[in-house]
Length: 79
Image (cartoon, rainbow, N blue to C red; front, side, top):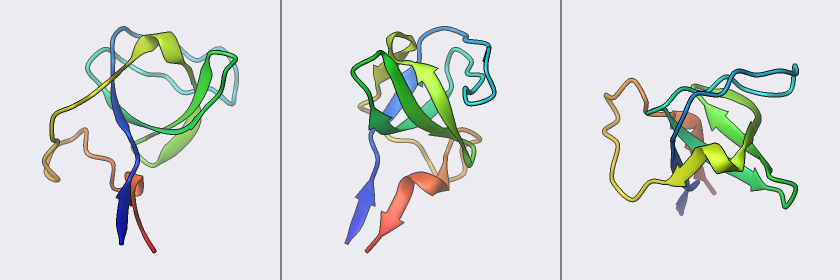
């Protein structure tokens, strides 16, 4: 079976302040890998993994074409 991580769209820019964080820009699509209650989520963006503030992310309900520059193939996992 194929499992796809939840996709979120970035609501506003965030510049990483620590080495375990990711830079994200408004309009980017990211995948949530781990949602922590402390407000920081582990996300994947363009094959990179790091933390970002959850308040900057909004659940995305649309579809992203595979040819899109925002498509992240690492979000697709097969069992």
